[in-house]
Image (cartoon, rainbow, N blue to C red; front, side, top):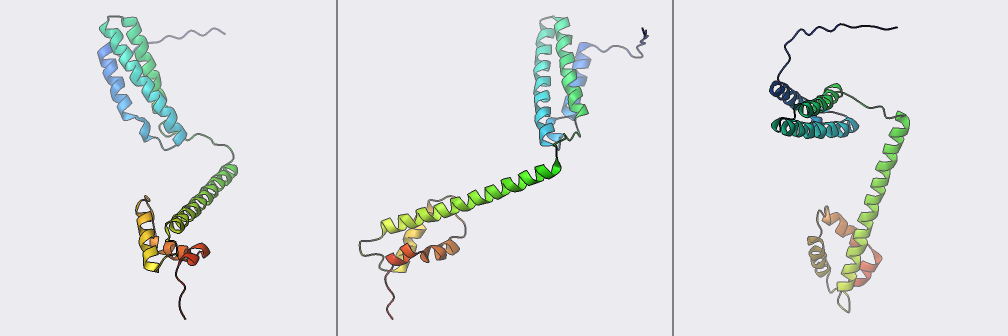
Length: 184
């Protein structure tokens, strides 16, 4: 089947400058950060950058009086903007939600485990530094040990709950051995 279509323009064609200005304002209305989905946001950023590049190319070609090339670049920019408009509220399919949820839980658990490992390694390091800094006959008083502990943790960024960690540290056997024995 051969279909013939008649197209009738019901508007005056815009000049290059008007079209350029209109597309620039449309681009501003549909910036990439307005998306809610991370995949959509990433893809939208690519289209946004492409539109900006095409505007620069179109402007340069127009200034050089290469009008066909200028319109070509403007059409490329319009295509990128069309993607931004169409994908404004897009949410991309992600496969099986149950598997996705399980993967998130596993990743969170792994992060928590690593955080615990890092905290334990930090406490081991502090204990080793305290033992190494101990005088030959051990610490003469618990307050001297605490003073050294405070010096060590002062150099550690974001060290929280120092008193609780101090109490746990003093309960370690190797630290207890470096403290003076209590007289009964």
